[in-house]
Image (cartoon, rainbow, N blue to C red):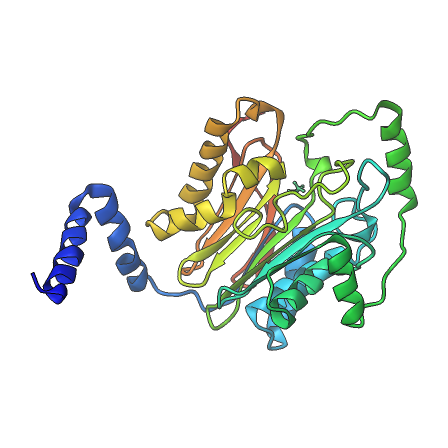
Length: 329
Ligand code: SD4
């Protein structure tokens, strides 16, 4: 057989596999999506109650001509700057050594990504993640290296320490109990997905991480594919809650891939939560929530425990919703 014919035979041979039902539905999904009309009105969806404020800022950014990436960054900057928030930014609860460390990542519509992990004294970690994406050949910078990069970029380090967070830390020290907590009050990471009027998508996720975590612990929030994933051809997803469970299951990537295979954002979030259930015998003891959006502007939200709120800015209205959940409380 001539080499050219041999190669052709190989391609046709693997094409025969497309007759299996799963592969063929997967293969036809992009075709289906091409037929659904892209949403061009602008949309923002973000986690927890603080999402309302973040959405407002993202929307304003869009009205001023900003891209989906600008919307995402400016949206969460408003929460990072709010030092009364104990779960995002420098007002966040510290690790078990008493130091607040921040995690953030960002993704644009071209599939570019940037991330900073375990960084100290940086007021806007999501903006630093954007600088990593735009001004370095890398995707992730960690700890002292991330902080050094911030300084090199002209960012002044901020020594803010929240008295209330310090007091909560002192109370925690008495027992030093280290276990994941599931209720709403103990989660507030902000994950935000934005779609601009070109129909392009971007996303961001920013947090001070799990309260009283071990020194050096990094959760899902700054991990591309775990706390956030955006594919401008398909949609985007973000996660909140117990980061370890989300990292183990590549949660946000999973949601986007399920949408790629033809699932709605809601179905994809529910299947991802179910995957977490199957992989964790202790699923009753922790919270994880997912948000998703597809190119048609359809959204989905689902969590392990009840109490996961999210904010949706669509058709000019910014509203808070409660996600459905695996357990009913
Ligand atoms: C983490 N996923 O560090 C974050 C925490 C969180 O709402 O989302 N809290 O694991």
